[in-house]
Amino acid sequence: MGVALLLSVGCLLATPVFSQPVATPGGKRTPSSQVGAVMTLLATFEDAGVLPAEKSPDANRIIKALIQFQSALVKSEHPAIRALFQKALTAKFGEAAPTVIATFRSNGWTSETLEAVVDYAAARPIWTHPGIVEGFRAYNVGQSDFTLLARIFTEARAVYAGKGQSIHDAAAAHRKEMPGKKQKMPDEL
Image 1 (cartoon, helix red, strand yellow):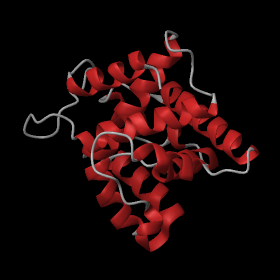
Image 2 (cartoon, rainbow, N blue to C red):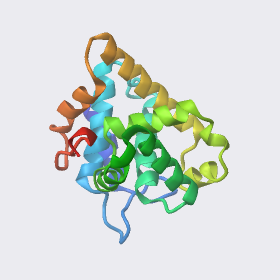
Image 3 (cartoon, rainbow, N blue to C red):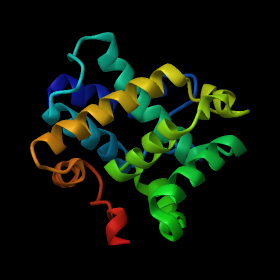
């Protein structure tokens, strides 16, 4: 992954540049596992050739979307955000969803959790649900940011599938190279 892109992610996660600070409760910095989670997905997207050009506005938007949606899903107490995440992960992981959610709150994205949210949103009009826009607005992201994130994820998934590979295997390999401890994958739970 480009050095400038990695530095951008690190800086964005270490400093409160958006309207919602990127600090955990108590003023602590974002855990390295959550930084590594964002960097893992960016590297996975880059290897698939679907990451926007490094200096383009969409490159900044995808970084922001990964960081801020992760932050919202980790920290938000908004009932609509909590319900969306619970339903998306339950749809994918069934009874294992509470364990996956707990792991997510500590470690951040995996390709599987992002897939769960993207696929859930693709199957229903989540942005018309009362409270979703308001809940995500507190984290300075909205439907257009999610649309970009979902498009890049689905394009990457298709590229890997076209090569007879799994986006999840690619992400797991990248995760070993990134900051923070190795995340347990949902199928390991």
